[in-house]
Length: 172
Image (cartoon, rainbow, N blue to C red; front, top):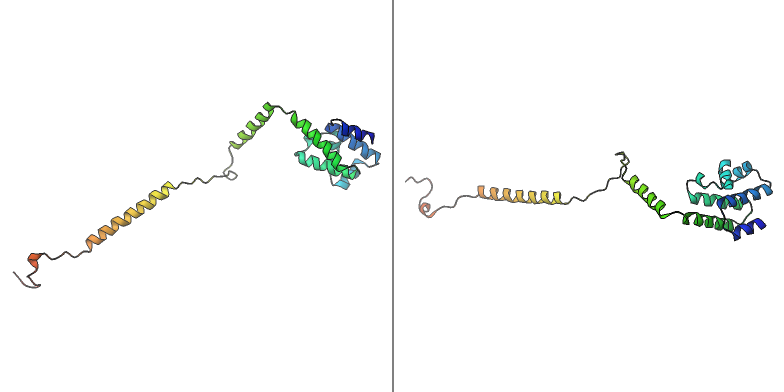
């Protein structure tokens, strides 16, 4: 119990937190395989938590939830353990240099520009409205031209004044 107070008063590393969880497990008389079966974890999962091996986990949130479940299983206060884990996480991430953050951003940007398979590539639809406008204007112009031609061809020529006195069939 005194160890928990030391943990809570000092800045904690993940290794120290893992050692505390391990000592609690051992003092409760629980084996790693028994804890793994009860929690539905692999034995290596618990070993990584107890050794403080943060890199073995894909996601920090997964690790935090695992530590919380493990602490609850061991009869510890999960909130206090998660608080210590969060302190560790804050200490760990606050030491990341600005150069490392910029390098990580460059890595992310380079992955965005990476060549992809046509089956997995996401296509952005470009709005090309101008071709449709030109096609519509061309169709309207064509309709107007056809209308003018058809109207001029179907007109009956008007009689002129000189032909007014002549009737059909009359020979001059």
